[in-house]
Image (cartoon, rainbow, N blue to C red; front, side, top):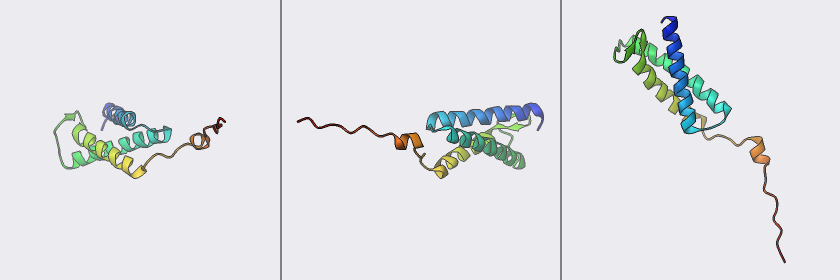
Length: 103
């Protein structure tokens, strides 16, 4: 894989992670999880596609379809394994003031 293909792969994988974060939401830690997962999954998918000699949706030396499929699967799996997002400390400490009962 040459440098332009590597740059394009990082750009596509990062975009997938950002779009997934936009859809699912979450904090900064979730954003980092999604972007890191999309990078790893995209390159694993690319390598599997190269190993299996899948030539569908190839851009130069980059196997786009296996990379995108692996990215989607990886992001869904990361979202399921991470579980629901915890409330931040500020949200836990934030309480509504007690109301007064009128006589």
